Amino acid sequence: MKRLFLILFVLLNCSPLFSQHEFFNTKDSTEIECSSSSLDLGSHNSGISFGNSPIWNGLRFNFSDCGIKEINGINITLWKPERSPGSSIRGIALGLAPFAETIQGISFGLAAVVAEQELSGINIGGLAIVSGGDLRGINVGGLATVARGNLWGINFGGLAVVSEGNLFGINFGGLAVVTKGEMNGLNFGGLAVVSENDMLGLNFGGLAVVSKGELKGINFGGLAVVAEGELTGINSALIALVSKEGITGLNLVGYKVETSKINGFNVSLGWTDVDDLKGISISCYNKIRGTQTGLVIGLFNVADELNGVQIGLLNIAKNNNGLAKVLPFINLHFD
Image (tube, rainbow, N blue to C red; front, top):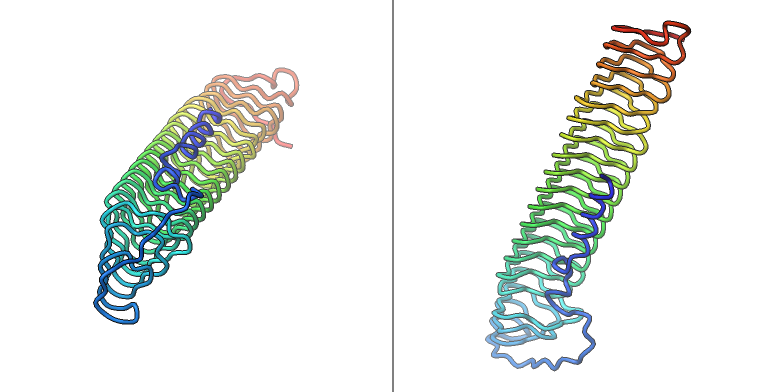
């Protein structure tokens, strides 16, 4: 099960849709000749400009940006831009696909908004919002919102929200929210919420919530919640809760809990499979391979070392003597 969701992470993160190079070939070494001709109404690079003025303050209209340096104010472009190394746009950027090394302010692109290094502010892209570095602010991508650095703020992607750095804030992905770094905040993925590092906050995945690190907070996976580190908080899934390091808190699951240890209150309609238990577990089948400290209630209960109470149709405490090893209805042992 864990491999299934890690495969989902790889597919999402490696998809060409989520690469800024699919929008613009920014690393192409081919020389581009950019004309700087423009009709300017103003002086000292300020006022109103019609054309490819590389430096401008004020209102600027251009068909396609190429080799721009610094634009401050309102920049309106009608067509796909060419490369502009070292460029920055501050203010309001409108057009088919606003593009610069750094974009700060309000940006709207019918196709996309793309920044090679940093993108911050309020950004709306018909297809995507893409940043080659950090992405901050309120961001809406019709298909995806993608950052190769950290991602902060309120972020929406029709298909996915993806970060190669850390992800902080409120994030909604129609299919998934995915990060290679830490994830903190309110995160909703129509299919999955996936982190290759620690995850903290309120996390909901239509199919799964998956963390390769620790997972803490309120976590709900339609099918499963999976953590390679510790799973802590309120955790619920229709099929399974899985953690290599242990689960602490309140657990509600439809079928199975599989972990090394449980601390807290656990309810599984099917099967609880754990090395050590401290607390209360209610399952049809409670299997404690190590030490049970506390209370279990189920149809069939097994503990290698019982230090508490078993209530069920059949109760096995392997550290009891004689007939007390296997008893109906109730069994107990206290060190």
